[in-house]
Length: 326
Image (cartoon, rainbow, N blue to C red; front, side, top):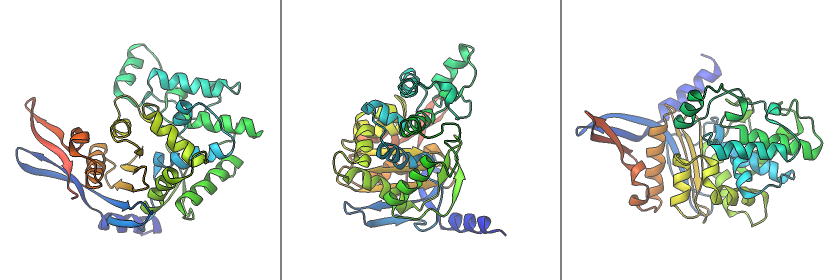
């Protein structure tokens, strides 16, 4: 077995049930994963599964990526800064924002190196298809981040053709920022779904990024990004997205979801939580993070639609997807 296979086996063997779903009173299945909780000082107070193995946080790394861009001089209105840290749903205001970021430095969507895609949101995707539109780079959910990267390259006089190369000055700066915020050295670099480098961390490293952002002094790049995301959560996700709902309903919460079952969140006092689900499921992830937020003091009724997600049978609610952590 190769090294990658050995690591994958260790992670899966250490995973624990974080959420599950019932049907007609029977526990029909469970979602396994890993989680870590920080106190306000940034110290681990609870953990489940593995807190030492590295994994790809995917889009949850965008807090650090956007922070690096802000440190490099990216200066935009708060809603557009939030969009540079987003995995947006592809709603009209998202696409307009991406065009604005690019247009402010005389670039067009043709400069984006995101793969052609439809919007992440199902309703927006169906609307595009019904209008006869084809997949395009600007509709891809990471186009806000890429627009921010291109903007940052222009204001620093860097080449915009190879801005996704791991040795491009922008990507080097992002890696340095992520290592500083996570207090970890990156040992594995991959390629994310959008084509940008994705840097592996441990769960505590990911939680530390969110913790660092919310406790930073006002005006510091990390705090600037955290404040923008919290001020405009609809730009971080979308009007029908859980990450947006969590930030809208929980005062001061910073949250960022990531592909393959990743989530990170931090309260304004510095407490933080990070989750990685083994099966990459959104519904298992949503229930797990909701349960952990409740365990950290969020009233259940504030996010009850995620703590108790309905399971249907015959058109009626017959069970729920719910947390298994206490």
